Image 1 (cartoon, rainbow, N blue to C red):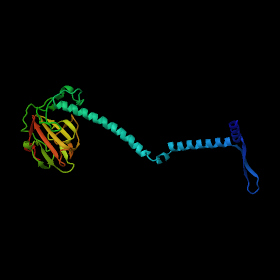
Image 2 (image 1 turned 90 degrees about the horizontal axis):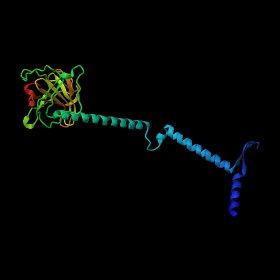
Image 3 (image 1 turned 60 degrees about the vertical axis):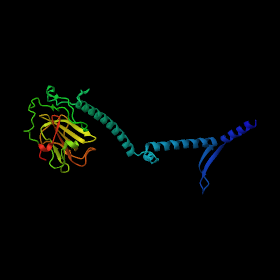
Length: 287
């Protein structure tokens, strides 16, 4: 009974009505009045608090105020995150393409048949005129010496003579030779230093059989010439030609640089090969 009476009294108190009156301080006239109860006051305060919470959440969610919260990234940071995610995805795709490309180059060098064709001939040249012989030679990473004859020519009427005595070589780079050809030290090339950003020129007419990046020698370009000649240009800053492109003697094919782990400064590492044998370029070219 006592509990019931206390509950009834509490309910009665909640239901009790009160009047909120605003008087004019000078005339004591009633300006405004309102009937209230404790329940009504509780509901009004609760509803007002709920509206305040909702308003605060909306302000934080849809206005720049949210960027003032510690740890919340700004618009520039979020944009950079999205950009970096796209860049990483693109880089991963390009790495897969590069790895696939190098795998096919390795297969060609070792005389294997790639699963898929990697080189696409110019549509203006009949496919029957494209001759590709598989060969072994010192790879882009300088792991072994040329062992078999290199022959990748887009011309069907290649001269049958293998002599190079009467060939006129164009100087790839005018400069100073800092490291000469020496088979004893396995340096089968000449290192030529020229002016900064000097152009690298093709030594003879030929076809680009490789143009790309390697860890040890940086940007590298290989040219196949007639008479089983191959010229190699390493440590370039930039390549100007792509695989399967035809070039003329003296035509710019790259820019001298300092790329790759094996470089000691800006220079051209130039190699000349004939029927799988390394030649001393100084015997044929006046640098």
